[in-house]
Image (cartoon, rainbow, N blue to C red; front, side, top):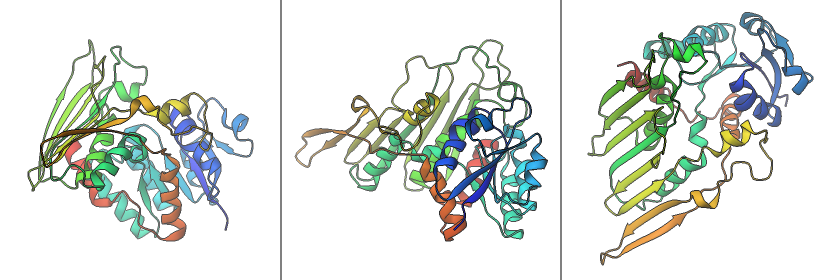
Length: 336
């Protein structure tokens, strides 16, 4: 079976770190083409790759079967729609689109052209998140009462990426980190019944939001609090979940992004493996009232699983894990 010939619409940080290494390493794909508007670096890394000057040139290539849309946020909808109309499968970086209406249009366009469109949510395959998921799936906390998910950074100065720091559709922290923590919450707990949102501007001279909090309420009474901030010098635990039987606390490790940025490749020894010092803490109260604590080691994880999911959906006809209704709900919260 031939590999899925794939084109990446941008060969910047996202293309070079989060997509190209996995497409090149996965036997089910062929990294076939990229778009490089100015600097031509791709062929020095991947000698056989085609380099196009424009997005439309890559989309028009009949050989391309899958298009990765990893361009600035505000362009996701239009570029994805063009690729779908050209009868390409499409993998779209977060945010999937700016509005839920645009997302619905993309799903309709995919069905009309007998292709598939996939949201790229690699954070479902972070080792820290996977450890939280394993604890919850095992039922160790009992009925859930409260959960907190945070994505903290410290970036006091205004960044150089104009698409993120200039006011406009999809700019700011809410649309940058918000999709990650919303997707993690929805994948763990399902669709919320109600929600509230607060967005703020704190950095000197910032033109876009740099703080966001979202409160999700569920029919069974569970309360989930999501926070993203660019002004946290000493990050708090990123996952805190309380239930009727105990609690689980886990820091965000983000080990894969760091490893990829430092030049490690998927499949290298140690890739996706957390340091032991980053273990989560499970605290259970026994029936007799005794407090029992246990360190939980995270299993190695890999963003390669995203590409396995895409491959299985295209070649194997299996359902893609990130569901359409989850993306629509995520965007309704972001845009509301």
